[in-house]
Image 1 (cartoon, rainbow, N blue to C red):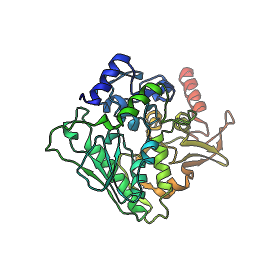
Image 2 (cartoon, helix red, strand yellow; image 1 turned 45 degrees about the vertical axis):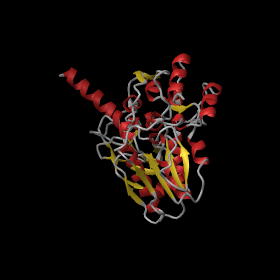
Image 3 (spheres, helix red, strand yellow; image 1 turned 30 degrees about the horizontal axis):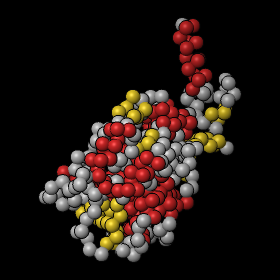
Image 4 (spheres, helix red, strand yellow; image 1 turned 180 degrees about the horizontal axis):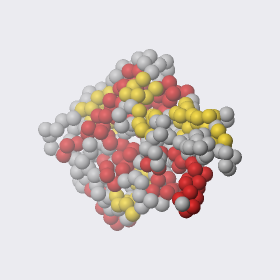
Length: 362
């Protein structure tokens, strides 16, 4: 009997229908009409992704592994026939859970949860699974030989993050990656989907985006799941975890900042905001930050940088914290109230205008 994975690929060639959908409106490149992000193209092991400002997918080549869904900071990608919520709802509580892209017999008395690829699993899904299960195993046997070239080190980093979060709440760190690199590449049974339902969903749900329930927000489901998973773990034991590369991000702003507010204006999720009362300040909400780094890219003073220490209490409370503030003062020339005076009690604009006048009068 023909491998269903090959049948699906053949179906894709006939219909030119991709297993993955794209919402151009969510793509950072489309929103700002310039190339700002190429994470999807970088991780696509099937070479199905191409970028000309916005991404496009070769329907014949796309395998529906879902790795691009995780790396996109704004949730522009979605699998047409499956969602992260579907997978979470299929987890049996109190048992050992095995996530795998194929049927296996290695783990006895375990609940087998099929996934398109273990690279599709995000930290929020892992935390939710671990919080209700005896043990969670990500079956990576054969990944070294898989044509998709899944980065098992990246999968292990997700596990490490999830275990660190669980430990901070006094939970058992019960997530592990099972890798057997000695065997041949296994035959994938339905490529992680149930065979009949898979083809029915592909043909029946064309164009729907199940990952993105709220089109008015570009905060991806992966980030929302992570925040919800952390918030549901109960009492914190150890507040601080150290994350060098996400999926939670924290920033600091150095004294070179002139509080121009460009970073807050360009932030696509509103994680940064400019507040003006008696003082002008730039405030940050970790629950909204997706790690797109646009704020760092546009800062003309290079005043913004990452901080590795993440306070989980800030994630749970979703409170705003002030990164930098300055007393508002009045420019003697234009009378505008600004956060900082450069020289001679003038704002930067008036100071520059004065310098130009002096240069021409000399």
